[in-house]
Length: 112
Ligand code: SF4
Image (cartoon, rainbow, N blue to C red; front, side, top):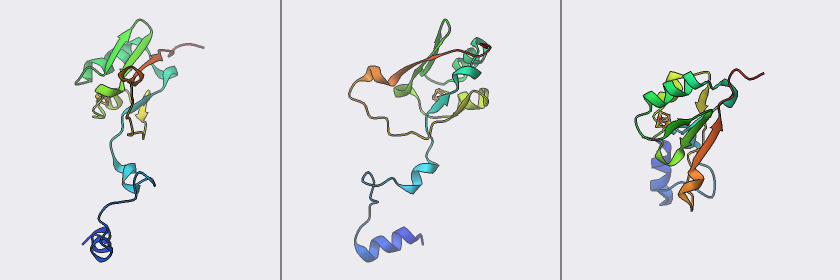
């Protein structure tokens, strides 16, 4: 029996202290990706756009457009380009405006 369950029964508290305190389990949650601008090339971005199952990724010229609100944190883009993508570790993505969830990431791979 998990320790937290026994503690909850004993104290009558069945929830964690989140959001007042970060929850340890957050480290194990899938998180949207973070992109390394200097590792991105047009080819890499096009490959990530092709594997993304939804509308979260697109490319406009030398810009990667990332709609965090449409990302399911599936990890397919990271599998397609592991050198250019890492988990952000950020899953608290509430926003008051939809537009702030759309990120423009410059494609700088190959720049010196
Ligand atoms: S994690 Fe999945 S849904 Fe999110 S941008 Fe990458 S491929 Fe698209």
